[in-house]
Image (cartoon, rainbow, N blue to C red):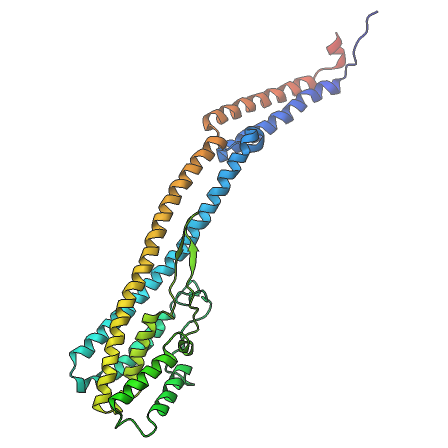
Amino acid sequence: MMTTGFISSLNLWNAPRTGAARLQGELADATREIATLRHADIGATLGGGVAESFGLRRQSAVLAALTQSNSAASLRLDASQTALKAVQSDADAMLKELTGLPADKRAAAIASTSAARLSTLTAALNTSVGGQFVFGGTDTGAAPLTAYEGSPASPAKTAVQAALAAAFPTGTANATAGQMTAFLDNLHASLFDENGWSRFSGASNRTLDSRISLTETATTSASANAAPLRDLAMAYVIGSGIGLSGFSADAQAVATARMSDLLGSASRGLVQMQADLGLSQSRITEANARMEKQTALFTARINTLEGVDPVEAKSRVDALTTQIQMSYGLTSQLRRLSLINYVS
């Protein structure tokens, strides 16, 4: 006995249509691959190798974040170096002025320049980059130094005036060399050591340490509380903040000698601070160079795993386009067929 299958014009029309949908999906994937030069479905294409690809991308992202962080650290270090160079230049100029003047001329000559340089020091140590104060140590959100001169009087100036009144209750004109030495020693201990300096500075003693590579950290800031900066501020306060011209010649000689010592030690300390920051700058440059090479290796491997041949992808696009056009043409021809023509 002979049987026949179920035949429908609708089935004939829909058969090419189903194939066209699949071809259109493949065409979209191939077109995307031409645009991105990556496989359209990384997981399906690489299978188990997708873990390596994702791992490489994660490591590349970490290196990119470190490089960006290093850029911010480099800006901070550059600003710090510029400020320290200016501060050292002022310190060296003041020391040169002191040593170039006769002892009895020094107090009057340095009063105004000391005041100006103390103001310049304050401004330099309040340098900010991107809203962060580079000499604030770990406390970068506020200006570290309070101006010595101002209204109302700064805590530092108030402390100096109180120390003067206590050390020379009967006036300064007849002050002895011994009294000046004792006053300066006490002034250093009460205002310019680590604890007393808080009347001048709100900075943190701790400096910023930054991760500059996968395995390295570096100090990327300085603090306004560093000893060379405290010495420099004391030298300027002696020159401008205690009325040095009103003291006896012997007391003036002691004070200007102390200033010379402070300026010399400050200058040497500033050189060391700049050298330390310069070392961090060099390490960042070297770390960036290494990470650039690592990133290039990761990128090359990722491209090997995920990349597509644009020529091959273009060939697939052309072939798929042709097949889709043929499918549309076949659908059109089938629509013109009747069931009678099909079975005749």
